[in-house]
Length: 317
Image 1 (cartoon, rainbow, N blue to C red):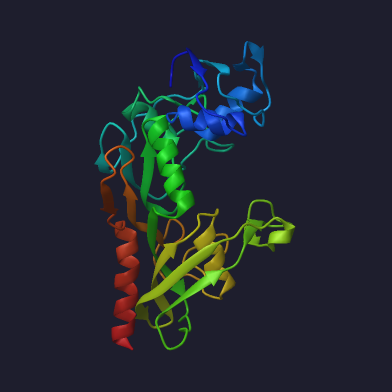
Image 2: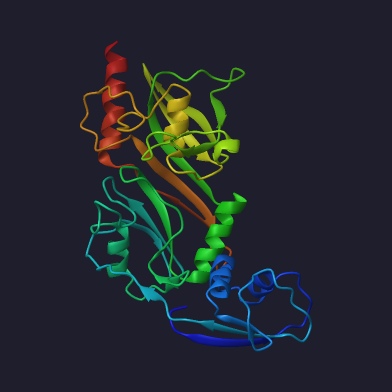
């Protein structure tokens, strides 16, 4: 929602928690947004301010909610070309190029995907009370491929729920060093190791036990093509932790080729802009029509060049 609104509800049923009740009644708002409104004093229960999300609701209670206008960010729209794979009034799916940062951050105040989206979709609503495009999931700066954008808060909430429920599927292609050992004679395997912030280098992620702050992370992999001392791997994510594939690949001794953070530093003779990792397929349910949407993002030319170079080396040998 992008404009200030006042909503008054009369409870028709009992509920243990105020935030849960409002999330059921106001499905266009995420539960986190509702909790934010409660904490900020924008909710009244029977004409009295209520700042506790845990307040019980009883039949007949009058609940008033003020939804303030979204806070604009100090961002400028930039006419950056976008490779659009799918678009309608609720959803946008792009094929992100290497080098494009998703969100503005220190060192990257502009020239980001968010800046491009502000130019492409100038009427995007506020997500969680801030006027910014609804980035549903992120890709690292030099990881290419499919990324989904919600154009409404309802779509954002629905797509986030799909990621959490693991019904949205993300598949990647990556070239790794070495030849991964197969499990039980098959050409696939699973890495199930928690990931958290590196204890020393805060710019990196690492395998961190859950009891020390790591979050569960599961990556499924399958050999797609063996290329001598390199391998093209098909990855499927069950979770979406920061740098998940890169950390898991390095942990099992097969880092992604060209990875400047977790890689070996060895050159393969191709001028890569970063890691050879591409978000190949994205499958999700449309947030409004419930239709199954599947897109396939064409790998960038440099990714194809890497494969061609490695295939020629195998033939020469």
